[in-house]
Amino acid sequence: MTRVAIALGSNLGDRLGNLRAAVAALEEVGVAVVRRSFAWETPPVPADQPPFLNAAVLGETSLPPAPLLAALKGIEHALGRRPGRRWGPRPIDLDILFYGDLHLETPDLTIPHPRIAERAFVLAPLSEILEGPLPVLGTSALHLLERTGLQGARRLCAL
Ligand code: ADP
Ligand code: MG
Image (cartoon, rainbow, N blue to C red; front, side):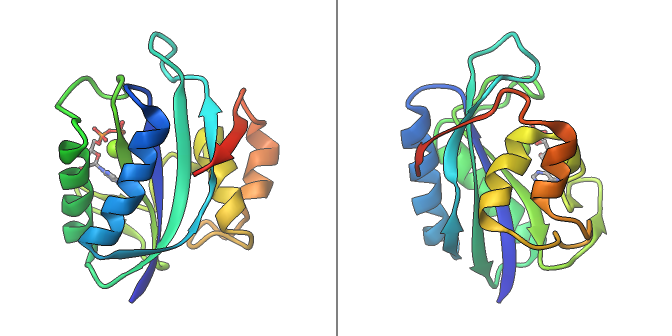
């Protein structure tokens, strides 16, 4: 079993319902969720779309990285996501933040996720579920968050 951290985001439809449905679906594809952050409301990047709800979960899985990504894409599709512009509005986005202490760069998958350190909407929920130094990055989410600032993110409610 490998410890994984997964980021969730939604800015279309029932955002909280979408996040909760995605967490339930993770269990079904073989990711046992052991910790979950609160839902955070965050300004959209780019700004010309509705605000997001973001969250992060820690899980244990025996799925290798590529099948895990395929499973996440399957959940996104099942929750109504269809191909659209990059960083555009979506009912659900599921990204692999960490996979154990693996460092991987392939055309389809980069782990750790390359933009963790600059995104408050990832760091804020991540800081609630992973308190020590982050895998590979070696410093804590809270420490990185002190550098970025909250960027307008606010803690909303339990997932
Ligand atoms: P974004 O999450 O950046 O808005 P998408 O969700 O559309 O964009 O993902 C685009 C592609 O990013 C995916 O098809 C996937 O192959 C790739 N990708 C690379 N690294 C990761 C990762 N760590 N987690 C999720 N997707 C990733
Ligand atoms: Mg994504």
